[in-house]
Image 1 (spheres, rainbow, N blue to C red):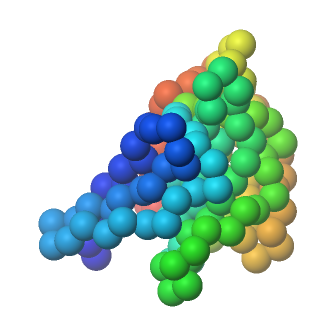
Image 2: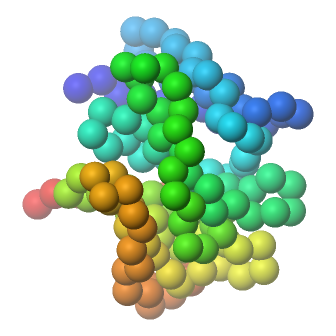
Length: 139
């Protein structure tokens, strides 16, 4: 399985993303809007970008890239606006944890089910976190 790095550059227009691997560089079509501090996860052969910020406005928007079609799709928003959120794929669902709402770090977490196309709340974390890294480890 190849290892990829997803680069989301900042700029004055919607972000064109670039996926880098050891063998190639692929430029994706731009997201619907500019964002910084977003989190990304892969699930079911698609790329999900969650939250982020546009200037001082924290975002709850979510977009999904389907490489078979080559386009982004806007998905239902998260319940909370979150920048610098951690995201991971667990059992075919996207989990997001913490982040910042622009005023404070968050305790909350939620899960997106790509089949049902819905978000559901998860139990709060015991400590507020923002800018954390995440990965799912199956043991």
